[in-house]
Amino acid sequence: MEKSRAFELPKLVACLVVCQMAGLVGSVFTSRSVSTWYVTLKKPFFTPPNWLFGPVWFTLYTMMGVSLFLVSRKDVTAPVIRLALLLFAIQLVLNGSWTVAFFGLRSPIAGVVVISVLWIAIVLTIVRFFAISVAAGLLLVPYIVWVSFAAALNFAVAALNR
Image (cartoon, rainbow, N blue to C red; front, side, top):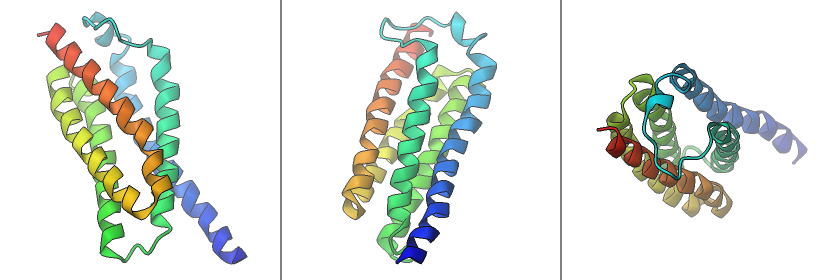
């Protein structure tokens, strides 16, 4: 039993690192545009201050990592687990792709397209994760709430800057 728990710590760390790396990659594109191009955009009244995004995303990526860990503890050879992990990987790639689309390409319209697909991928992931682990599914709920807010913000920025 203790060997099993000892083996789980590296897996937990790996899950956390994978998720935080997605955020780190995205921050490269954000940092290049947030103080130049982004400040020139018209933004809706509900735009949060820039300092808020870092702590929120760090927390969400941490929760995503724990959620991923809880699912990856199961039998990863089972088709239902493999599908859930594939959906998680897809949404994580889309998460990083949104940053490239919005900040890297400096395109709110491209951001709208990516975040729309991302939102669907997150919902599908949550549904699959809930079926495997209620805790894993619950850990992703704040993520979909934040991405829903980010989508509204992205749509508003695209509309205001046509």
